[in-house]
Image (cartoon, rainbow, N blue to C red; front, side, top):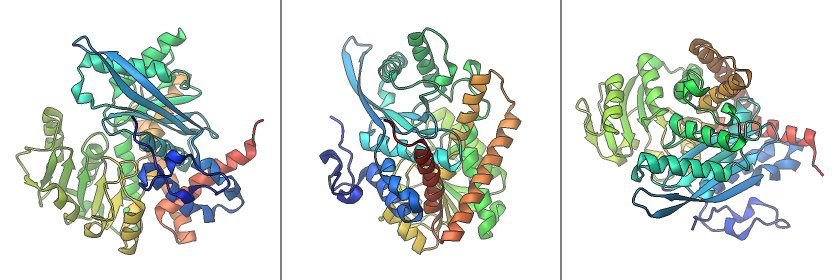
Length: 438
């Protein structure tokens, strides 16, 4: 059975209460998102009459994913695809394979995708998908069969003009290739644009794998200029060292920063003089973890939050920074590479301590921006070189951040609230222009 998503009782007017399964005491990821919407509502002006649109996903699909295991038995997995809002264009968002995936999480992630896409002004709505499974327990054949069955099950709501999945936690370009092939076989023709994050040989875009980490670095460098921080002398701590944290750490190191601590699913390492990031990336590629890296010392996981650093990059999972550890963080700036890594309570603590938080909905939007480039290239069958893609990405991220920074200054609000102001106004303005049908 799926874990019931939850939200505060006050999330909807009393005359239109949310379903009972959303009214438990546990806030959950969806409840965190609803709190964020509540905080931004006073800044929406006349558009606030449409705010309930943001609090209710347009479509939520729960599917059974049965597959034959290699031992001859049949296993069942629970899968999800949620389309939060499609007023501005097709749904867009990743698919994750993780043992802790819940409907609440996927709903929240789809909503944050709506905000993220609107914040950087790409013509997408928000969507997200996932399967509750530990993919490390599956053989390659089992993983392929599960991916293909899941794709067939959600095929009724995805498509190049309807909803476009992409890689996320524990999914990669091979998973996207299987998804694209499965959808294409069911449609009777090749549809490269149904997913992004594909192998380049199947219509994928150059620069896509590094795009999210590059976006994290880009907005971090822009924010550093505003607060007078010299990146070349900064100390950086990174949680999660995959495509997001690893690439961001590499780019910060290339800019002269010292990456002093890294934490992943298996442990935490530290070196005051700075880690050799290229060597660490090779170690992770070979062993699957930062643990055992010879040029660093192992420290307790909980001490990661107390590392003396200037920049902290949470690039793992949701709700990692909370009321229990926010007061111990020593960084001047937090760049959210992961989706939803900071709880609202932690946000308040960090704000009171003058820690600048660059929210996920702008900081990690580099991935979906280059996914948009990939989608456009697939439709035109004309592909750009990597230098052009990176230049376009940096320009869009800088322009989006500059606009959000100005909104934050004008309204004297956090960057998270400013991002929500910009994004929610764009979404709700589109909703108002389109009206209701029928």
